[in-house]
Length: 452
Image (tube, rainbow, N blue to C red; front, side, top):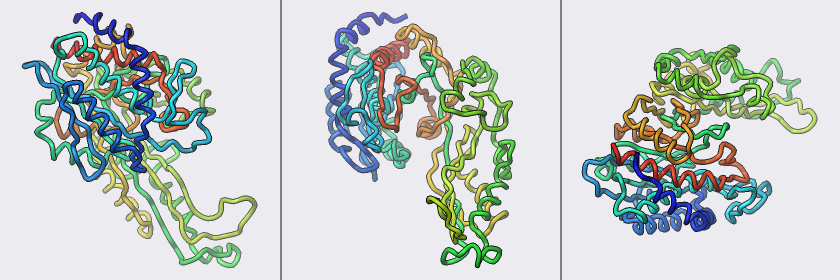
């Protein structure tokens, strides 16, 4: 085992300084959706990476810039790419924040502020791990590349083209680690092996050029709401099965190792439902809880819009209706193939409905049997004193496909934030101890990779 005590002692000795620096970082707005503070934040990070000896630079794209840095001084050692994002969600609604979103405070052992959990506190912990190693050793234990994105919160529209444009900068990457997302609600650390993908689309239909009186026109004018209701009913049945031809063609069962990992994940389903006021899970009822999030695709109606929704009654027959939908996809599925199948279904069952493609992000998964799993597991134990839970695939989506499919390397998620971080919501927060553990875990990961 590598000797981590000197670097851990340094992290503890500089605990308050690290917290103060994180709070200063969080106080800098960097809202990609509005273009607020992006340039200033990117410049700060570029300077900081240069101070760390990583020769920071900006990678320009058609959107907001990526921040890149590299330390490549250990021949034969693995090269790990540490990915994160410096952009944050808009803070609205402001009136629901206890303290201003960009004036971080410490209360109840937590740092409160927009972006502290998603993702500034987590990737800053990675950077402080590098700094702590450099302060206590002559060199890093393995080779490191840092890439921080400024558009993750708007769907990472340019990350694929950025990697392709600057492909020579990533030629020697062996694996990718993303510190993002929450730990398990039990408090146990998590090592995840990929995210689900996502496609989003809109279904829109218009039957006339104006709304009608429901008495004068009911039974005469077709109702666009019913048109969409009937179409949606052909797309998913009451047993929870998506009934679009070919939707499940590429769905593969979990491997034996994934099955063991899924069965090992602790969950109190009744408590989960009680905490959010649910009375049942979605169909099918016999599907295990974590299988729902890791091994199956989904079809969600995000919003249904038409007609009158105000107080009282308005006897209107609307002329137009639309729904917004998304689908979460698992590893073997492909975004364009699924969108093609949805479009063909719409044309077959409701040709008057317009199908509008929107965003997409490919799924990604690294095998649990990867040679990097064991050193990463040992790093968590060394830094946190706890065995991490192994999660075959997380429920949400990240641009992980650029690593596994474009670069062709394994990729892992090592979340450091508390499970109730409230990311994307008012009162986003990160437990102080989780932040400090994140620095230690980042340092331990570098050390255990360097011993390979």
